[in-house]
Image (cartoon, rainbow, N blue to C red; front, side):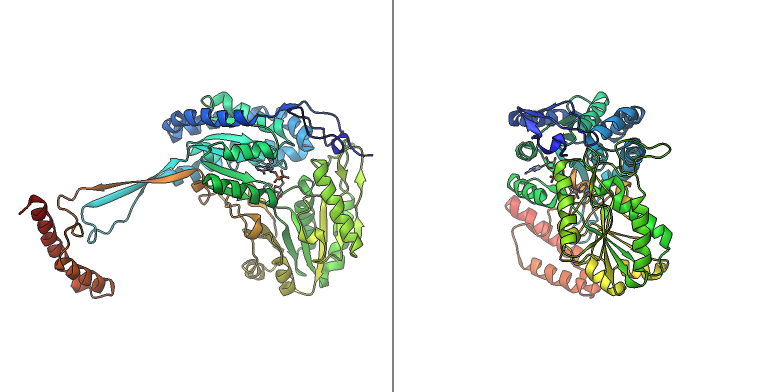
Length: 529
Ligand code: NAD
């Protein structure tokens, strides 16, 4: 039977009306923000931002720590929303999201503190006498954050925390599939932060577009490749910086010398946790022939014993929850059907279960690069296995993708693992683990190719939230020697500086004296002598 969410439009009469992915029950509606109100929100944010930045870094940290502490204290509310809007059961949602805000913020603080330190510029004294300069990093102003649904709460820790810490105001647009979790996150922050520093607007892609057009100063977009491209075009028209964190199709390479039980457990986890709805999920496994039979058999056996149900059975938790929404479930069904039609062998799974949007954990063997399940992001509880001759073939095929977020190699030979890691086209390559750095504020989270060039987390990300401003101070009482009017001494100075650069350092000895002559010439000229 089709779930109500599969036949009812999500947006109706100016409201978002979702359904629970677990049991199909309707969720409380959320009002869609009209376009004019989006621009108003940004205007209010701009006014509030000035005072927020002026508060200073330490005061901002204090307020944000208090707010994230409150989020943690109110974790039961977060868990209820994550179940309702994310279809996530507490045992998983606690570790992937609800437990995160305070810790994540604490990890951000030293990263941003270091980044915001003013930098003295290394101005060479010989060529530029009497000058010094310092570059400070200022908040950009109002940062827009457009979010996906797959981590309805955790998705904000990467962009919203550093944006606020840097002194920006933030206007966020949660996914239309998880509006109330976004609203909850905002409302807890808003209890502690000055009015209008953090705001939400709600709706689908039209509201997202309205936000990009609204006059924001910078944008962080997290979502699919197709939408990312549209958002980038609009951001280019608006001339605003835009960091794009897009989809993935992460490969894992399983070598014959891997620790088999741990590798099976690791790949099962990274392929199926969060129901596979993770940009850093293992979505392709290249397993060398030598170990392929044993690996496939153990993985399929373990995956078939995972619990995927709307209720906890006695003594166990639900391992694999429902897909978040019917759109994603349809993609999963299409990819599995396509793979089977093209000759893949279904080792386990391959069917919907229960009333909600559940789909059995699925392992496909004998997959190849003609199949959607290998080429396109599936974003569901499906692991396709591709058998390869050796590590060289595995690396070649792993790189044969338009995506490049993470990759992993599973081997006990760490030297070989590192060598192969350097051949993989990905933002992060793991050996004997996968995608773990996504929750670390100090580790860059980025990709190559269509996974997007945005960098989330780490000292490599805050340029999205700050702009450099340089203050240049000249205490030289003499005019600069290259100022007008020009004369033949300038020619001589130029020659001497060129020779000095080429290693004839003695040529520079006379330069200060020539500079003095030039200064006198210029001053005499302006005095009319
Ligand atoms: P999506 O692209 O459909 O939507 C993302 C957000 O963009 C939503 O809030 C949506 O309302 C909004 N949007 C849609 N059209 C828009 C438009 N034209 N202009 C402005 N905003 C618009 O993605 P999704 O289905 O919500 O999320 C899943 C995708 O996100 C997957 O591809 C996943 O890999 C990716 N993702 C990437 C990362 C990362 O860090 N790289 C993290 C999480 C999710």
